[in-house]
Length: 271
Image 1 (tube, rainbow, N blue to C red):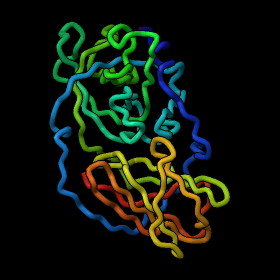
Image 2 (tube, one colour):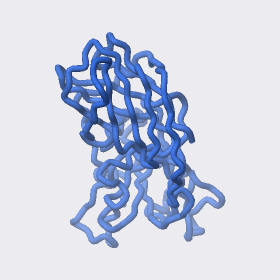
Image 3 (spheres, rainbow, N blue to C red):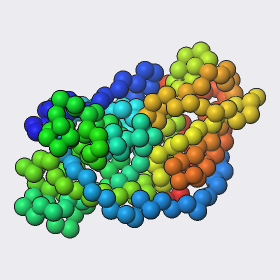
């Protein structure tokens, strides 16, 4: 399939409030960390899938995707990213998780001894105009990765196009702390959570002002979380739970005079 058609299958979601054109100075916070002993078998078990690639129209094109990260270069994800098919995407909960991917079976196209680690940042929509085994690469029940061509060419020759691969979940390694991009208007508060190490995915979020207890936030889409609450003129703290069940609390992430359009940095998960 030509790269341009593969690009059309990617679902790009516009971030309603997030201002990604420039990231303000990050603010570090105090923190509390609660470890977990769970280690999913998916971190060590190789599973079968297939992979195709896409090439952006020009290198500067932001392909933010269905996880809400916006410009992946500015957000620090670069080209080490992947769009996942329905069976893998988990309605956006998997956003931020990391996978090790390697080419298998086809010795004509595989680059021996190579693998890449990519972060789930997008959704590959199904195309029911084709059968799952006849062009509908991301149709259920296919496990499918769509990679930037820069990542694809690290494990296979580009002429391979639709390649058999193996993948497994791995711990994410990130520089700095978890980032909280705070946006919204009035009492509507939207927070984009990114740069998450460890499991990478976030399954629950709570927020706390200096005059409130812990308030649960709802997943808007991808890793955008929201709440309707008057939290202005209060320092903000966040409690995150990742897919491994590990809870991380960062206190006073945002100072009392925080404002919409700012990004703050908290503590980071262990990995």
